[in-house]
Length: 181
Image 1: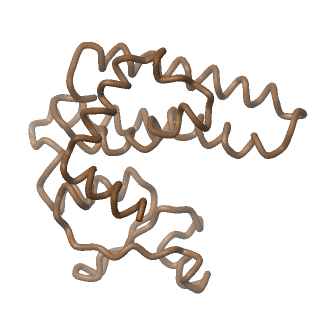
Image 2: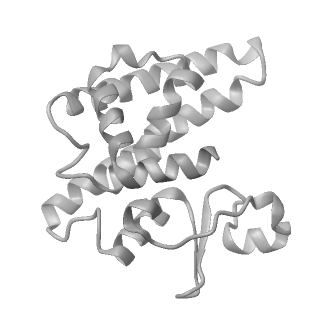
């Protein structure tokens, strides 16, 4: 999103920041977190960061109430459903067979959420009314779903085609290249 908005940024590994300093930015200690030094604002939680960036750049969040609400519901769908399911699968996978039922329950929840998202994306180009913060929020999780949750994207052609569209966005390509280098 930073690349799409052409906002300047410096990526810093939280391990390089003294823990008390990082906790002043992200009280939970979770990643991601950000500081806008120009405006002296610190934020944690992906959805809050995306909302802030959209407001700051005046992009990817419609002003029209109906369209804005559509974007926000999908942003929160990601924050409340997709993200937690994937995170549970990832974290529990290190605990062995004893937690296999919990992993399968999270995988079932994720499959249901992905089916809903897939159905939506089979009917439209973007998650909401146009490319938005909902797309930027969902993109990294859907990129990880196949590897972390063992959910082949071939079962979700709408999501797979949408991922291709997202990867073709110039800012997304720049962000991927920066992250991979």
